[in-house]
Image 1 (cartoon, rainbow, N blue to C red):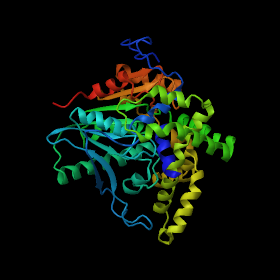
Image 2: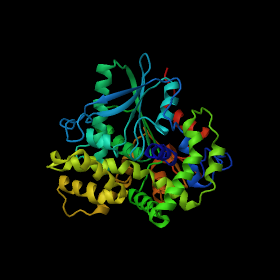
Image 3: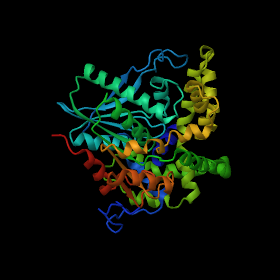
Image 4: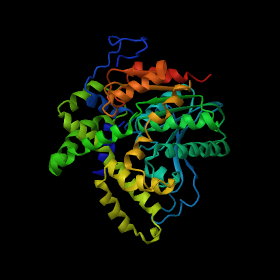
Length: 423
């Protein structure tokens, strides 16, 4: 069951075009107006991780010392990244996706194939909010505070470059970055770091659907996750099984030209609440492992953890919501490490939103953003403020939900066009 649910998680995860006047609502003909159904269409963006014509290598990068020998986690303390390389010198594209994502499935591998076709080396990194990143690259071991996660990501990318150049002989002409969802928010903070320190020299950033107000996004996810209790166990399992029956044909077949209409028609029988429940269900698959790894790193008596205890603790963590993780793990660790014992949870979340760095984004011509006006994880006020800061470097489409239109040719071509092609 867990394997099928994991594949289902890939299903659910993942204004007037351009307010500056370059496009009109009539020209943007995205076919799905329901934001939740639109989000579901990300199911076919490499649900099997297959990228035709691009050979993938798994590269293990040592980032933090001492993380490879923790009890029950021995030998897993290196960062796992996916590399798609060219034979000769080429630009390099770093890609980071959303909460809990790994480098081997979903939207990141979809765009890896497209960028590779355009002559780029591509490196996909795991999300900072994943167990592998928490173990291998998070200094605190409890990711969730975006500014510090971006700092850890910045170091991990430098270490990755060192390994790729020394072991693989990778020759790089320039560097780009694409961030998706939470990866886009982390990429925004990354752009501030690199503008000041220049240790990577990233030429351009494309940020897709960053949650501008993290507090708003977390509350919305909690509301969606709460539907599990409303439905009850039996109905929740029934919804998951029915969704898998719709998704299976798309996750089992490798489709270069998927039938989005057929997929949407299959999910159109679900109620609005059921679709929200399916989308929020993704968190259940990534949080238990993250919670467990964070606890092992924090505990001084971690050596006493046995494999049976580890399995039980992971099982117990399946009830965690994103807010509970922040409140019980991320926020306490942040307070202790920053020496701010009086800081509240709202401050912890607010300081990881885009508002504190809007000025930096406004003045950085290397940053581009694509977003959707009907993204249910973004409130209108924050989007307006972000659009005002970014001007013509931000495109806001009227429909698409959360990342649901990345495959749509006008959106896809805009993303690729930001970076151009390799010579």
